[in-house]
Length: 207
Length: 416
Image (cartoon, rainbow over all chains, first blue to last red):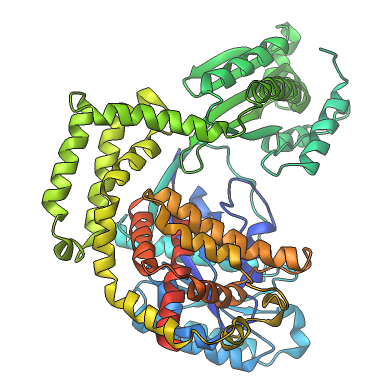
């Protein structure tokens, strides 16, 4: 028997970089009826199995990426445990927006928020405008992870969500140790106790 | 009952699954005399499973009875029973040979044929007022488990048909059922002599004592909602389990019917400034046509429903009906209904070729819909529901939907 902990993940990024497609690919690629609470694309619940048999539930929130709705973003990332910031590797402008999102999260969101950057549309490698190394260097500089992903082919999608799950769980564990009384107040909300059969191991494709 | 060949049974279930309902998840292994141990091993993860969402009027004991009948027919014996679940095992004739095949590691195929386990679990989804029944294979040979599931399904369908025949003059049987429970709960809670009635009375007195002052109460509404929630939980602990599975909802409805008019005043006070500014913004823009508003909001042309008067009318009306209800669940239904109408408007118009799916597309339309509502208490209603969804667990989706509407109000105030 194991308790499943729940974390809020917000998907950010400029409009049309593929935020919704990423979450949909992650949620529907391997469908289990008890893992998706709703058919809506902009709110997906999915359980992720971490090393050591730890199971966490990600509540993934999609957001509107247009610049004019930027001011509304705090409504969505408030109390988020993690953020997936997506950019389009074929659009240099969208990578600059990533930097703006990171700054905003660092100043406005929870100080413990975990960040994973997704260089999406990597199936269009020939049109790449952002060097993969530059993106990785930037991610390292802000203590974030970087993944090349393609919602079209599925490359890197599971990996990036597994990484964000791993990071938010690690933060939760750290906070739980530091302050056991507050460990369930935000993030890592205990939702249920399961005794289901173990899930099928997921393929670990390298991105 | 006519017995069908195993393969036929399986294929009929599978094809039905494909045609009808995703909640019916039935996975199986093709029967074959050459089934390898590896395949049998896989089948443990992918054993047959049948899931159905039923009205609450179908009782747990009724479902367990059907399951017992199905097990008896297929010679499965009960190995474990709880109030909401039964585990049944089918063990074939105990021979020395079977005994050894159970022990030997290389005979997974035969081992599976020797013993099959199937379990029924009945749960209540209080939020949706539904009973969820799952019959799934735990171990063994899928075909044998399939037979139990097939019999269970047939009996359930037969019982369902009879039920509907009995109620053919009243299609609102679920509503009627809830109303019956609500009436029972109301009788108990109105009786100041009963323990639950006393508790309810204490709660009401305490509520007025704590939150009678509207301006004071408006300063910390979340604490007030937590207090109401824990009080409802307390009342439910006393009477709920003995009356009906969704009695909590009935208690909640009873409580909010008594106090919501006052709660509404508190939230209206809290959001009074926002409501005034929202009204002003609507006044400033009232001469704009729908097309102009949509252009201003950058709604994609395919979602503008050109040529249709009053686009998104149904979604707007659903929001306008928020004020008609006192119970938060009913109000949340209005929000869900509005979102559904918004999305189906597009599907209808484009005959399924286009869909309002991403937040990039949805948010401008939501802002348009919020702008078109005439409900003056809209910000207060949303704030009330946000507090409600935050103090009650398992309402993440509802909470997220509500944040869309809160964000829409913010946008109108700042950008229109």
